[in-house]
Amino acid sequence: MAFEPPDNFIIEVIGYVIDLFFWLDILLCFRISYITFDGEEVTNWRYIAIRYIFQGTFIFDLLSVLPFDTIFPGNNSAI
Image (cartoon, rainbow, N blue to C red):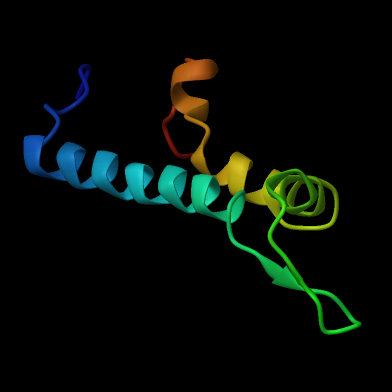
């Protein structure tokens, strides 16, 4: 019990694949057009990026993908 159990390779690969899909989702959200209230489609990537960052869910998407266990190493045991 003094050491962490060995990690399962398959579980790690699945975790990396899921992270990859979340990163791809973030990249796609910067390129997907949107419709204004006037019914016009906005396809300019700058306007799309500004809307996604400031009015969208960019911060939540980014926080869901950041590897906090790597950034802040420490004791991960449950109390």
